[in-house]
Length: 84
Image 1 (tube, one colour):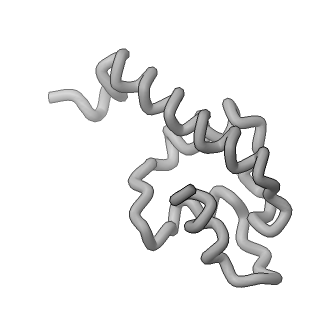
Image 2 (spheres, rainbow, N blue to C red; image 1 turned 30 degrees about the vertical axis):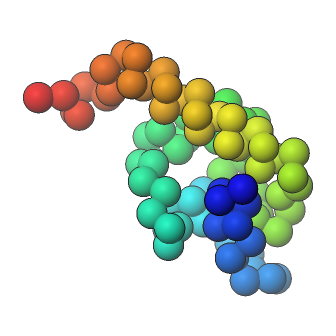
């Protein structure tokens, strides 16, 4: 629900893309570009898709993909540049 609220904060009629909205989220989503690309791929959402074209089902897939990708990253110990 928080993700849906964040996407609804994008002004109506805006040409903002999903990727741009998530990267520049005021709420501090905290997902970097590398993971975000994986999230969008897993959700089946093109990065250049407009937020205004997102449905409830799209947002649900996006939420599930965020959980899945971050969980996998933690299991694998993160990206190599994130390790000490």
